[in-house]
View 1: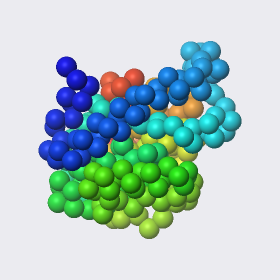
View 2: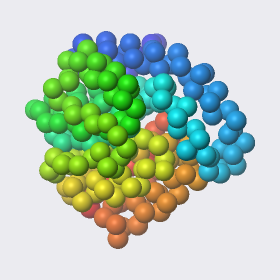
View 3: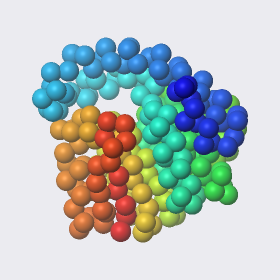
View 4: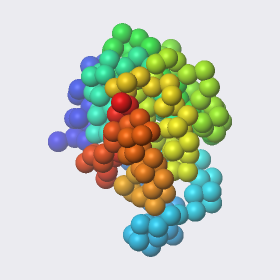
Length: 228
């Protein structure tokens, strides 16, 4: 069984081919990425915070991509929501953006607002979306979030919160007022870096802030939140 068999749920062969190619490239970088985290493994095992401001510049050439199953989950979830307006924090090279843009197109059209601080990554993401035939559905913005997330479409149906940990809560707090009731937030990396997401989890699980939220068994643990 091929890793790419899970992509069969995506109806567009051009999108599937682009995703398969990009996932293979990301797979080939996994050991490289793991080596950059190796010095912090003891801290991770003890569930302690790691020095992101030192580590972040080392990620400028890495995919840092969601996996195939996560991508398909986001695609199907966006389809179920009928999502037309999607925000993504952490575009990287655009793998997750392709899943989201494909869902928006298959829902009848709309826009995915992506944000990526590394200019060269944003440019490559646009190339990959063009390769998949989805570029006209995406606005990838450069710069640090949440500052780059201005003039958001109304209402936001789906937020994929998958950038660096220290920005996760500010991004959610910025986007939340634009989200409709029943909109969804998917936050990757919460279980991998629990200390760095402690404030995020505390905030999003407090119903006073307008969400119901719980950890789901996707990848190594993903925070799933619903706007109420």
